[in-house]
Length: 356
Image 1 (tube, one colour):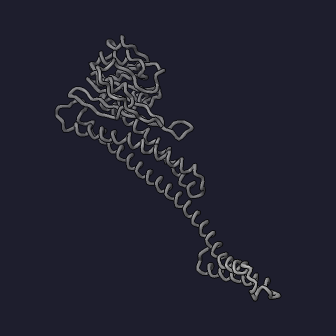
Image 2: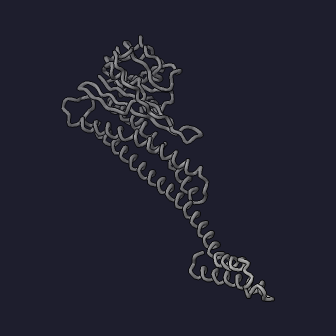
Image 3: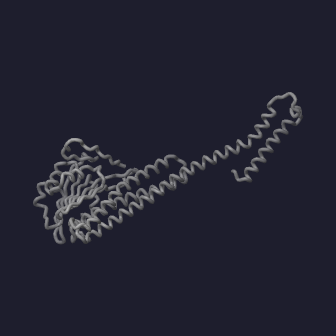
């Protein structure tokens, strides 16, 4: 699981834009969709120089950038669409918290897209940023793991209502696709949680506790990612009452309300799973403590049985000359018999008291 670290603020004039993230060796590539209900144009690898003749503001435009390592392309997009340098900095810094920023003419939204890493208990994280402005939706993806293939296919095949809606509806579809990744990740984690819950009841292996703590960290990371997402989606709902913002059509707010509801459901799932992990951890410790108590009880019973026997042995081991029993012909066997009898009586007594 990738930990999010925040860079210390500079005390001098900021340097030019720089990409802050893990995927610094990936190149950048742009794709452009221009569409409406009757028209579709797709350019799978467009250059900055082609934007002017390809963008059609009378139609819906979706520009997607894979890879943030090429600063010139990001700066070029910013210059063409008039994107504020601070927003470009937020796009390039993938360690930032999920945020929503709106102006009367634009809406900026970035989000952490999360998926389970292959063949491990870790979580794969990617930042995706969206800018909705002047009928153009721009999406910035940190790497090439594309979650929007099915949406592109819907645009191509005119499936659903996406071709009849504006780019605010497309933004809803893209956000929904990213949120679905949270469901996939949580379901994957829950499968492992069920396995750990069973193992904690059947095994005393300390590695189980290590795995429980690992998945607890994963769920806490998911929670830290979803809480700001929930707050940002709530911010979009609030925009409905803000007469200064007209980026999202009035009939589209209901879609973002659904996303907000999904974020609440995700948080509820995570809280439930954290409680299950807490229960599994407590059961593991309780089981270990119970086993230790059983061992201590057995040792205590054995010690209690041998206390009177040790006393008898100690008495006859003092080697005084005038001890009548020492001259007794069957003294040895008598003492042994008494000791065995005492042991049997104590065992029967402990058994009746259900001490073992």
